[in-house]
Length: 213
Image (cartoon, rainbow, N blue to C red; front, side):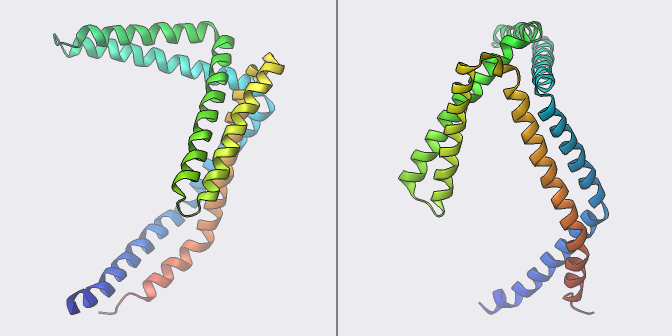
C-alpha cells in the first residue's frame, strides 16, 4: 500500500509533463486549427447558400468513391489469385462499378434516394435512442431521450417536406452538409482560440510542478 502511495505522485508528474508537452506543441500550431475551422465554416456557408450545388457535389463524390472501390475490388480479386471467394469479390466489384456509374448518370434520382434513406435512418435511430434511454435509465438519460426525440422528428420532417415538395430532394442533402461543415468549422475555431489562450498557462503550471533535481 505504501509503494502505491509513493508511486502515484510520480505518475501524476509524468502525466502533467506529458500534457504540458502536448499542449505546448498544439499551441505552436493553433493557427492550423484556426485555418481548418475557417475553411470548414466557409465551405459550410457556401453549401447553405447553394444547397443544390452541394447536393450535386455529394452525389458526384459518392459515385466516384463507388467507382474507385469497384475498380480496386476487381483488381484485388485478380491479385489474390485463385481462391474460393474470387467470383464473389468479382461480382461485388462489378456491382460497385455499375452502381457508381448509375449514381453519376442519374444524380437527381440518387439525391432523392439518399434523402429518403437519411430520413428513414434518422427515424429508426431516434426511436432506438428513445427506447434505450427510457429502458436503461443510465445517468443523464434525459439528454439521450431528447437527442433521440429530436433525431426522430428530424427524420419525420424530411419525409413530410419531400412529400409536400418533391423538389426538396435537390437541396436537403446540401443543406445538411452545409450545417455540418459550418458547425464543425466553428468548433475548430473555438478550439484554436481556446488553445491559444490556455496552452501556455497550462504548460507553465505543469512545469512549475516538476520536481527539481
